[in-house]
Amino acid sequence: MRSILTVYRKELTDHFSSNKFLILLALIYIAGLSSTYVALTNIREAASSLSSNVFLYLFTTGGDVLPSFIDFISFFIPIIGIIFGFDAINSEKNSGNLSRLLSQPIYRDSVINGKFLAGITTLSIIIASIVFIISGIGLFSIGVPPTSEEILRIFFFIFICIFYGGFWMGLSILFSVIMEKTAASILTAIAIWIFLMFFLPIIANAIANAVVSPESASVADQVRNYTIEHSISRISPSTLFTEAIVILLVPVGGHLLFRPVLEAEVSQMILNPLSIGQSLIQVWPQLVVIVALAIICFAISYIIFMRQEIRST
Image (tube, rainbow, N blue to C red; front, side, top):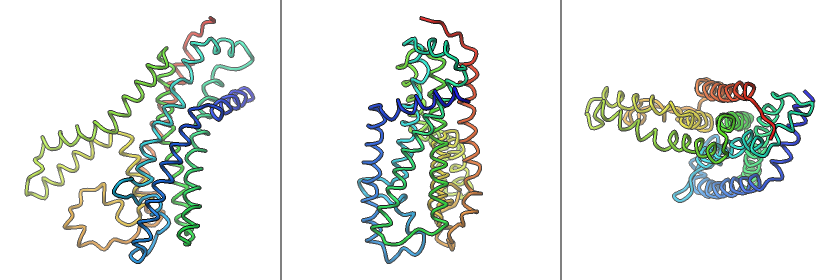
């Protein structure tokens, strides 16, 4: 345990003093504060029509030019996770520091565990700090304190973001373990992120349209087209993450965005806000898959690293 804490403190110090941490922190703060400004403007304009969960609109409201905060965070979290994990192991190998480190009374598993925990801690600090800053600005500007349920939703939102970032960090650490070059590990991780986030939805739409025509007048065909497209899109953790945070932060009708419900049916519904318990039941499958993927990626990298031969240079 002492060796893990030694590696953890060293990696945490390296993260906080690195330029990549400062750059990522600045980007997150700029994006978050910009989206907050747009959200506050729109909330003031529509203040009369907002009846409940006003505080959550800080995170879900966007504008014509800038998207909402949850759109920004869903884009930046994979980048943060990849950057903090792509050179965790292979950079130490290439520099010869890994063999010298293991010659000390430090176990091999302490190295990878300490690096992963330090990365998760740094990611948690970045996400939690911007969420709390936005909450403070919103509390001062709106003048409406959040309810206890809204506070719980925000904390669960942070929790989901951390595990989502943990998946991408575990994936990048895996490539850092199996690849010798840091450039190869980061390019592979970014290529997978681009495919899952941008190209998979296009492929899913094309397959669904090939199986069932989107121009069909049949309600059953429209529902089947939607079901096929969204089932394929759920292969991507990005889709699962988006579903989870939208259902959690949009209690009124957010869950309808991911179900085969026609617009004509929505107009006849009486939409009541989901309670925090109902929202958690809705997002539980997505959260379990995201956590499982994060654990699997790190477990595979852990096993491979423990079996690798480390030569002194």
